[in-house]
Image 1 (cartoon, rainbow over the protein chains, first blue to last red):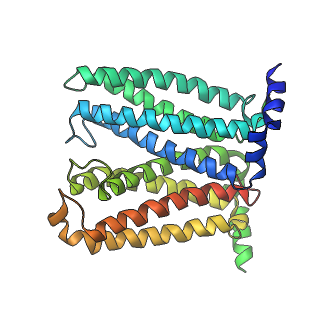
Image 2: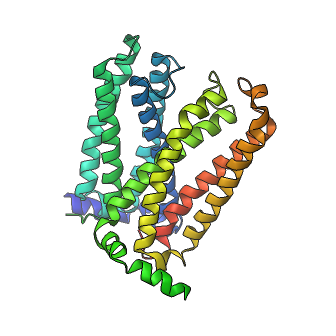
Amino acid sequence: MDIYEFGDWLAATAPSQLIQNVTWAIPTIQSVHILSLALLFTSALLLSLRFAGLGLTAEPLAQLAARSTRRIWQLLVVLAITGALLITAEPGRTITNPAFFLKMGLLVVVVVLTLWLASSARREEKPTGMQLSVATLAVLLWIAIIFAGRFIAYTKPY
Amino acid sequence: MQQSFFEWLQNTPAGILIGETWFPWVESTHVMFTAVVIGTILTVDARLLGLGLQQLRLTYITQRLLPLTWGAFVGAAITGGMMFIANATSYIHNGPFLAKMCLLVVLGLNMLYFHVVTYRNVAEWDTGKPSASARTAGLISTFLWLAVIACGRWIGFVSNLS
């Protein structure tokens, strides 16, 4: 079975049919996806600002980093579930779409960077230049992920 | 007369350029700015409702986060305006778009009341549990911003707009 046949098979399954046939399902799932993304992006932004000595500096670095990264993991779970539902509903729109693959590739990189930030912030008392660089790169990657996500709607699948 | 103004707007060089070329980029930028607006506001609302950041003073949180909120809001308004120019005649008949604009007005009034009236005795509840009217403002804000996201996403589902 190639990826096109898999897409056709998925689109014909009962869960996919259900999401496709309930008119409000897709925009509702997308709204939850965007809300989670908004909270995640803000957490990532506030974490990077904290490494730069800006934002919520009254909260100790280790505490803010632990809180932010825990929140990012929780939101990623919600994003993965809603994302999976959107793929299930419209496989032809996503799984052969270059913008979707770019988004997933960038996601892997930003998850690795966030794992490193989470572990390094536990050790260090004061923010390091390396942490600030990695956190800034992570924010830029989240921006690229937002763009790639929106471009799924404008990019032709293979 | 009204229709012709929006038609004119949409057919200005800027309207045509955005509509034909820039739209996906402008829209993505709008999503990014909106994420910061809503993310920071819901963080403040969560603090008002006792759902997070309890160890920090409310005035400290607002002082640190609201500049971000406003900066991002300006970005969201500019990119939103650019999207409107490109498809003005469609937006003015788009139910979710009109609902979203009404919600933003109500949210503005909620915020204005909070800052002008509710905030007067903030010293009394800055570190502890916010006053009943402050908690109400946070609850209204949370629900209406969720509705703004939903309306924003629905704009593309009731017309040829994305």
